[in-house]
Picture 1 (cartoon, rainbow, N blue to C red):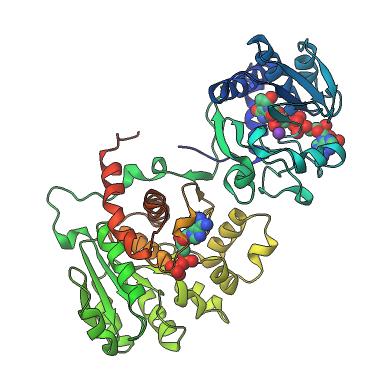
Picture 2: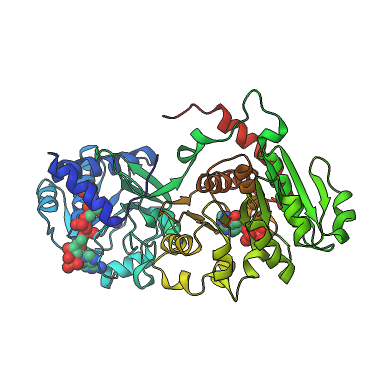
Length: 481
Ligand SMILES: NC(=O)C1=CN([C@@H]2O[C@H](COP(=O)(O)OP(=O)(O)OC[C@H]3O[C@@H](n4cnc5c(N)ncnc54)[C@H](OP(=O)(O)O)[C@@H]3O)[C@@H](O)[C@H]2O)[C@@H](O)CC1
Ligand SMILES: Nc1ncnc2c1ncn2[C@@H]1O[C@H](COP(=O)(O)OP(=O)(O)O)[C@@H](O)[C@H]1O
Ligand SMILES: [K+]
């Protein structure tokens, strides 16, 4: 399982390894060697300038320079300041090559950015800032993080940071490697093992390691009722497509029975377009409560309408036993009284806002949080439910503090209706009894894999049909633990 560590957690892991008997200089040797090897794997021998700062990031840089030189590469160090930590001093003392001052303006092929890593405490300025703005990213290999980025937020301090083609970090990813815009500054990210042992954190990369061992595969005796019943609440006649997209997502991901519950006026439109997905009319809260009686999960919101009816339907569903996926209009309709929504929810329910919807029900929270992980966690606590905050770096957070960040998103998913399919995927997994946090993670991961695998030209209608291949991969995957 791949945790993501904050800068402080990484520092603690580092200190624990040192306390357990591995000297910092050994960790630095391993770190520098990993970077040099990553360079050698990707490039033929060429000229390399290693930009070294005063801290341990710079220390790693001196190790890289020494390794490359030993392999016969033309390499020199450009130092922004003399080494200042004991480990960096030791690494610099073993560097026998040439050292010039930062920005000596030599012709080079590659630049190793070893100016600042985790210890960056203020924005880049002077020559470092100039270089960050001018060196083309194809030349840059960053150690730990591209200098100028805040490791914990992924934001460039004062908008200046290096852009790298490759970033080699150590032990685990940090938030800067997974959150935008930082992730975009990093280029390819390699996580090198430097022997720090196991670390725990409440934040993870969203990958099958997190949930595949609890995926709700049907048992040999399964029948359709045992595979979970999902309902999807439809909007009125002119807005029925979103409910069908969600329903197809739920059916494809394995729910045994999926029913679109439709206002009477929209029945004919659905009937003409649904096959395996079932259809039932309802009018009013009592009828909805009755229709929802046997449901294991419900999706409400996609094109539901920002209406009093949607608000009443949500409250009605919240009183049934079904786990809810609350999306789109069912979020927006609570804009003026989000507490009514939160009071109705329980911890099994999943909210799936995009940033605009998030702002409506958690006003100011995103803007006032250091980054979106904190925002999503705070939101999950406030709502008492799982919150999946959509975007290029989708975050899933639980009220107990667990959080995961999606790494496999792609812009092909930015197409109308794509979120409706996601809501259906999560609903389909909830209907099959999957834990809500894991269902939200699994739904987001499968959705993103499907989108990335299809690529250009993707439309939301394609997504349900792309799910089976992803499920087949998961099904054939060797079990973990
Ligand atoms: N963790 C691990 O397990 C391992 C970590 N390793 C490596 O250590 C790195 C972290 O090292 P680190 O803590 O020494 O931080 P780093 O960024 O090198 O320097 C901080 C210094 O820079 C200064 N400074 C900061 N910003 C500045 C600015 N804009 N302009 C000018 N100065 C600025 C700051 O000064 P101060 O703010 O204190 O005045 C301080 O002196 C990590 O990224 C990884 O590469 C590996 O060796 C393997 C094991
Ligand atoms: N640039 C992007 N990279 C990765 N995923 C994206 C990007 N833009 C949007 N997405 C994903 O696409 C989906 C869009 O959902 P949403 O905004 O609700 O659209 P709709 O309401 O039209 O279905 C979300 O899952 C979101 O995370
Ligand atoms: K760096």
